[in-house]
Amino acid sequence: MNTAVSQQSEAEVLLELDGIGISFGGLRAVDDLSFKVRRGEIVGLIGPNGAGKTTVFNMITGVYRPTDGHIRWHGRDITGLAPHRVAEAGIRRTFQTIRLFQDMTVLENVIAGQHLRMRQSWWQGLLNTPAQRREERELIERAMTVLQQLDLADVAHEIATSLPYGAQRRVEMARTLVAEPELIILDEPAAGLNEQESAGLNETIRAIRDAGITVILVEHDMSVVMNVTDNIVVINFGKKIAEGKPAEIRSNPLVIEAYLGQDDDEDDPLMNAVQDQVNV
Amino acid sequence: MDKHMNQASPATSSGSTRALRLVGPALWILGLLIPQLLSPAWITIGGIFAIYSIVALSQDIVLGRAGMYDMGHAVYFGIGAYTSAILSLYFNWPILWTIPVAIVLAAALGAILSAPIVKLRGDYLLVVTIGFNAIFVLAMQNNLFGMTGGADGLFGISGPTLFGHMFGTQSDLFYMNWVVLAVVLWLMGNLDRSSLGRTFRYIKHDELAATTLGVNARNYKVAAFALSAGLAGLAGTLFAMQLSAVSPGSFRFTDSVVLFAIVLVGGQASVPGVLLGTAMMFVVPQIFTEFAQYRYLAFGVAMILVMILRPQGIWPARKGVI
Image 1 (cartoon, helix red, strand yellow):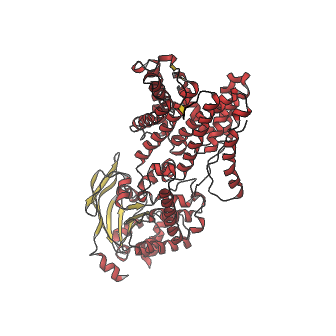
Image 2 (image 1 turned 120 degrees about the horizontal axis):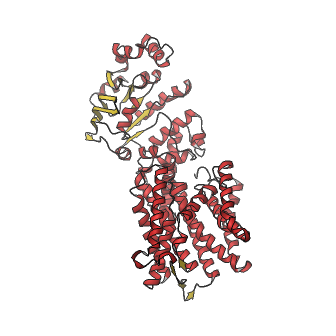
Image 3 (image 1 turned 90 degrees about the horizontal axis):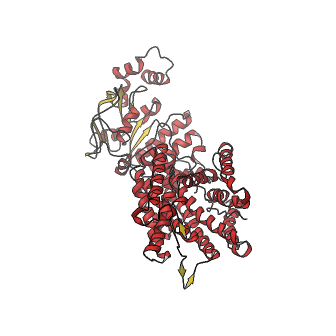
């Protein structure tokens, strides 16, 4: 683990956010945000509710176009590219609110992740040619391999949205992983999971990294964030307030203030979680 | 009257669905007996049922599969019919040769008309496509290029000649339409099991999720329109042969509404559902010919009841293909 961390500082910069910002009407949702993600890292993006974390993800994946700044991928400017172009570049994401294709099986959902690998042309599909059938078998095979890894093989033919919440999260993850992306962006993967499931999530995220995929993670569950990330970026009101290793973030006064400043909000589970971490 | 249902091969391997898989082809073969067993009126009805089934199935590509509210689908049906009529009457083309032109022209028009509008949200797209239909009917009525024959349309289109045999009688045309319907049903089954068909459904269910997986949603939506229009164009040629005439009255906005309703009432993205819907609209009224003028009343009531009691359609699409 320690050697991995020390190697990262020299690793190639995969993604660079350079002063990005976006306004919605008069509201400055994200302002002058910069950070780098190096190959092989697990980067956590945290911050109080409404800090702009999901907005950052939406800008990286092309759902929103930043009003300022640049996003670079392998040094190439990808600011404002359409979502499908960002996907072509090798960046995949999951959603805070799970977005599976309803009325379709787990297998069909995961095959969707292989869209860019598809070689069959429209007429081959319509005529059901041998080449098309062969490709369909390969798509299913590859999807099944990923489903096996995520312990979903036995529900492959179930309707995806009929599965329990935790399984749906894993299906969404399988759909991104089957594409073998370079970078995967996980938007609150632990939301709605029980303790056992979120412990399993830690393993899954590490396994993803060990497979050579870089990870950015937005997460409220501090047990996940503090345990799996190599680097954490903290934002509040759309601005970066801290960046560093989990241990540094834990003791950073600005972070503690951002989370703990809201003294009157003692029921906030997030605050309590941070407090627990601080007290360790 | 059999129901002419055809099941798009179910993937689940339970015994009942495997049995259903045989029901479709069995009904189709049974349908081949219509000219032997039934009166000439029914032969015509059977032929027209096949044609309208193809149009309704093509409407279902855009509406039921790709999820776009196309309320002007009669335009592409009409383009196919007029293309064949004009080429055969003015340029003396054998009618069979006009089929590829009708398909390609309708598909091209579908692509050109849809390209600027597929970004529109459902209800806005619906209004635009109504506009397309209004313009099309007006253009045909006003004798576009001096070739569409105005409000009366064009007549005297002859049936095809194949291997020296002239397809002139109603039963000849019936067999031809019935065979083309089988080919279209085969294509629809393949579509649902192909990447193209799946991608349409991905876009329908969650366009944002699909695009973050690399789907160029705009291109696929235009492709859905083009494919669907091409199929409607093919049906248009069959229609011109069947009636040996085309006129603007067959391709009005109300005809588009009926196609739209057939898909919703029958079951979106469901091949048997759409065939059932078509049968309800075009075959059932013939059984009660003396009440024919009430068919829209009956269909209206059926629409209301189905949408309230069974919003997914009479025969909903099977969830999950693989």
